[in-house]
Length: 64
Image (cartoon, rainbow, N blue to C red):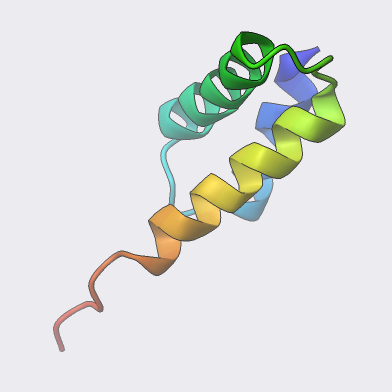
């Protein structure tokens, strides 16, 4: 169930290591379950995607 979500997000966030993407999806799923939400791959993917966007957008710009 989680693997397709990880693969889709890994293809979208090429600069993020696969292990980080997988951990982010697993964390999103666990957080939803902890809150009592009926977690689906779509929900976990949306939450993980927002977290990954935050991660990518918060990285300092590369030095030239």
